[in-house]
Picture 1: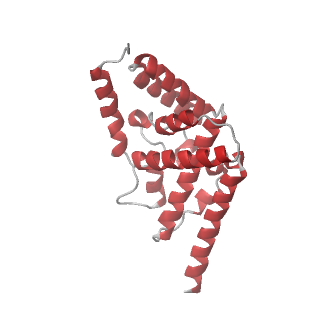
Picture 2: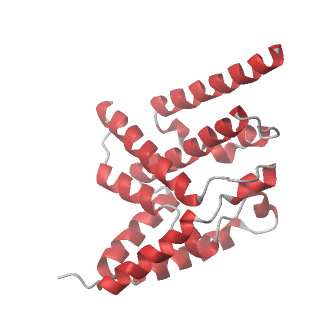
Picture 3: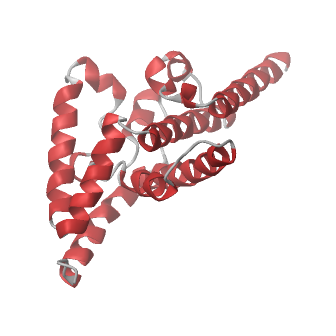
Amino acid sequence: MTDITAKQVLNFIEEIGKLKTISRTGWRFHGIIGDTESISDHCYRVSLLAMLLGDVLVEHDVKLDMDKVMRMALLHEIGEARIGDIPFPAFRYIDEQYKSKAEQKAVDEMLNNLGQIGRRYFSLWREFEERSSLEGRLVRAADKLELMIQVYQYEKVGYRDLDLFWTNSWNMQEFDLHEFIEEIMQALVEKRNNLFAERNRK
């Protein structure tokens, strides 16, 4: 018998709904205004990408628990429903460990209201954060790869001054997990190079 009530489920899902309306703040710092992606937008594509990458890696004989992969992908940003999306430039002034502690406290409190199931979810969230498993590293790779695909898509519609995303090693975490992931990133870089080469010819 579950120790979660119907009210607790509704409260959790209602709170997670905030992610639909919270923008990914970093884009604002780079001059992208208007209808920027929400945290939920990002999470949805991370989940699809993690699923696809995981299934491909399994076909390459990589031993993965795909149930864990999908749960981590769905859970990886839930803390931002309480602390918001803190953009990368802020880490010049805010030590990342304080952000990590705040997020962990928020996630712990949110999931603690879901009893034993919530404690299992928290364990998976922390595994992702610590990259302490192959599954956690894969979801981290999907998280960063999705970011870079979004950067390219913003550049494709005309936004400029996004070079920092491509030179920041923080955005390339775990791509070396498997050569297939590196190939995807190389293909994305090639698409970007072709985009700018075509524009320069005009």
